Image 1 (cartoon, rainbow, N blue to C red):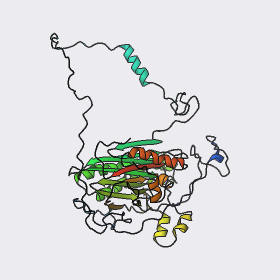
Image 2: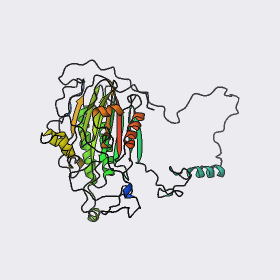
Image 3: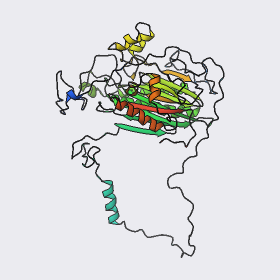
Image 4: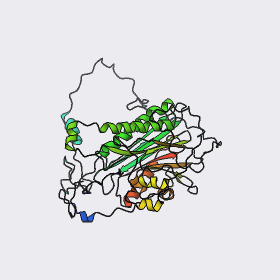
Length: 451
């Protein structure tokens, strides 16, 4: 959950989001016991990586397209990844590109005939009379289609049309409460958490082929700004717009760093469009902010690792050899990070301030100015890229802490590892929505699926 620097919103019930009055012990709408709400765990993000300067990637990409007026004059670059080529020196040649996987056979494709076929059949007629459907078969199919949903809590009660169990009254999970997806070697998991009434995070993952025949994988993670209106719609619109832009640009030969910058701009435009409501809708909610969210994304292609972001979601690099150092590849767009970078406060002072987690960059119609940060790296060893919201990194802030909780086989089983990381956040309290995507580096051979 991200926060914009503004007046704090009124307290809400953690169960149904109904506004609360000071001193309430129970929610007047759903009866939730407010005294049972656990205190949020301490949240002290790590110091940002302040040194700039990323050298040539050494990848034979076509030159990036000319920068548009929306492109920042100078990209916002974090500290170089240990082992990367920051000074332009040559690195060992990248492993040969993996071949493109064969396309799966379409559904219903013909198969080879079985043995034992008889050839003494009588001549077949030109037309066959159609048999009337069996009413018993139709009735059986209708019964199967209308099987009632069973409650996930008591495993016995029927779920009504409102999403509640008729036996125990337990509210059933909504579609966005828990989401999982794989695309090629990249996988992502998102969960509502234990204290929020809905999941305001969203993600999108993709996999495509570049003009030279090599593969590229990508992940986009967005965190809705809870103090804005419709944050869940904002995060979904941004993630979808960004992945569509990437899947369209990369196969045409656009440089990944330029493609990621353009994708963030497309995501911002999609979120801005949500603010274009009818005037009648604004009359009922005149004081609500425009929909807003943060965004973070990563691309793995041809030995190159590209990251881009706006906000306080993060990307971490975790090498397979845990003896090598892990690294954080993004810098938060937050008040505390600005104070530390400007030398106005120490890290301890900045993160102890109540304004520490107020974000200074986001996507939305009321954003100050869009500054899409991008950076490129060329790691010299295998690893896994962790793209996540603060719902995860609040429980593993530093690169070293993140490296400790990422499973050792995350590069081979990214979906399993993503589930483990979400479970870590839930075990820690799950006070926020949790979303994480994992991209193995370099991209493994196709067919090496996740478990």
